[in-house]
Length: 255
Length: 255
DNA sequence: TGTCGTGATCTGTGATCACAGTTAGGTTGG
DNA sequence: CCAACCTAACTGTGATCACAGATCACGACA
Image 1 (cartoon, chains in turn red, green, cyan, brown):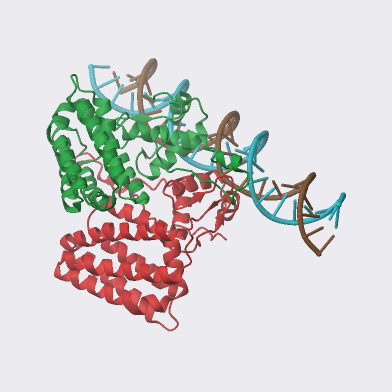
Image 2 (cartoon, chains in turn purple, brown, red, yellow; image 1 turned 135 degrees about the horizontal axis):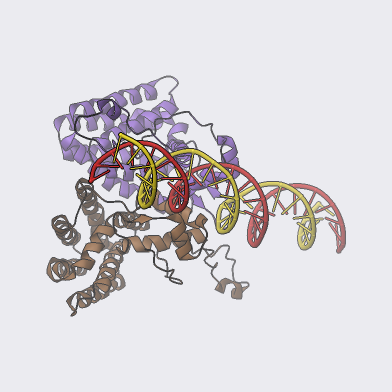
């Protein structure tokens, strides 16, 4: 089913900050107000569905009905159509020929290809991050790593928190590379692997978290501190590959 | 302005080929018809706009009106909305806060980031293609290369044909890597750089075509024939970098 | 002559209605 | 008891209408 709309959610998507015309030094009070969000309904629904997908709350194969989603979110069918169109364009959702729209079920081949692409793209982001990250950005990564370890080693393990912390850790790293378009592209990749990956982590948090993930994360942070791009890439590749191996062994993939 | 709808256009996007249920050997006649397109109107409009973007027929900064596009294509406003939503989700189009939707104008920083990403992603595709390409696929690349050289060295140079041949050449290469998701991701990148890149090539075909492009393409084909992944990557990187350098010098980029 | 106010016209956004296709469930005939 | 049909409810798609906001141009006032 569909979760309720959370009020603001602090959407991290494409920011719309635009100071518009800014003259020399007159009317200083007017420059304070920075163009309010103007977030359209369709965008909010998109963000809502994206959040559900990337956090693994929507299982692969799950069917979505435009009318049901619209009703659950308290909006008309129209914004939901727009949101589904966008996500379907990214293949984060798929619409079957004459049926409903559903969360795609990846084939083994597709999952493997996606993993290979992630190794290249996210590995590159880690490399660049190791080159140009500020100490504040490295601290942010460390903070999320601590949160991840805490959630993973708790008794019982807080799988939801671990999933969220893992995501924040990775994206804090990617944003440290200073390449916004690259970050967004990675977000699109996570939209595709999110359902299987996080659904699995949600089911078996200790297997993945207590093991190689923590080790890889520590190696990653050490590489960031030492400003060692090659080591950062290796650490991240190890992290992704370990998770992917685990998925391949346990998750149910099509065909 | 908006071009007219070309009848079929042989959409090369996400194929919808699906033989549906295929039983043993009964009703052989029914298996002939391969589930007809079932292409929705919105999808066709999307493909139409995508083609205009990737071929550089829509200039950066050009404004689009949903109603005008709808009228020009002879459809309602609805399918156009869907198409624009999809393309805007990929940032192939952008919708200003309270204004119209337009083709994005890249800043210099954005263009450089895009180029860096292309070097990584398309370079990887070239590497993989050199590993696994079949002879038929290599021949296809060679065929497009010949068409490109012919169009570029003609008098006067056929810039439209050169642009098209260049695109076919690159995508024939990428498809040879056998990674469909990667190809689609690259297509998304081209959607962003297409307007500036091809618009420029259209204006000054000889500068780019007669020079480094042909050399890079020849080196690329030689690398494919020799099954040398590293050389293929170098050749492609050289091709992209030369084009990007030319753009940076001549094209008018924002900010 | 320069500048501000103002109205007409455009923009995208959202809602509602109509429709063809498919699916699922219930019923009937074997 | 099983299978086939048939109806009813649901699906996404497309069109039309209504609305708030922004832009632009013209005209009036200083």
